[in-house]
Image (cartoon, rainbow, N blue to C red; front, top):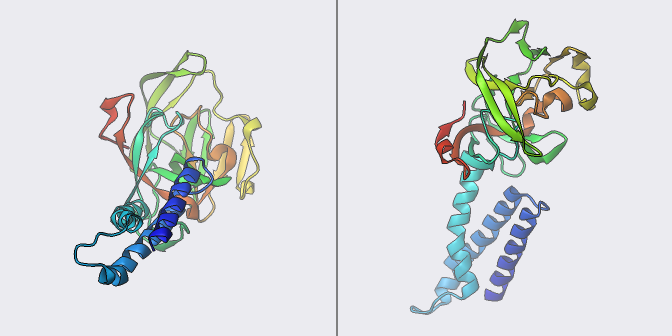
Length: 290
């Protein structure tokens, strides 16, 4: 039994290495790790413990498995059904989120889903305009994106001259200063920051003078593209049922639904709500995501 436990633990370590290399998914690894250590824990509880002497210790492989099982189980349950941590890799959500922010995502706000399969089994709330959502990128579901919900099913979303219109109503808008940031080559760019109201959510967004709000050459082919019309000024899209239209708050520096289309409901991961760490700026710790 000890040899088997050691072999299984070695396989788990190899699985962790594959996750870091991007070959395997962390949810699947956690599920397998929970199953393996749980089976060894149960085997020890029901069989091995009765064969051991009163003062006889567990063998090392069994001891490691029994010790790891409750920790792995807790992480699996928390990550699958309650909250999941993410790191912001780019500036597409500036000024709301910065590259290097570590955030928490509420996994149950939009419904309870089966781990790994990502199939919703219990409805809770529907995504609302203005909320910041993490989702599996439609072109590659192994990659997670974070954007703001701009359009919900049935909405007509227009973006012309860098201004959003939802169902024929221009969004409330007011300028709110500037935001300077560094780009590649140590160049600094100054963007215009403004307050925008989407549904019940008021948030900051920004645009960069001199950069077009929509670059038609970056447009890709995607499902339900017939719901959209494009011209030099921008575009208009009708969001299909069961889908969402997502945009980054850094409107001129975000690869989003403008170019690759709608996000299916099945791709939803959860709602971003809290910044718990940024090693480059400790003042951001504890910030609520609006």
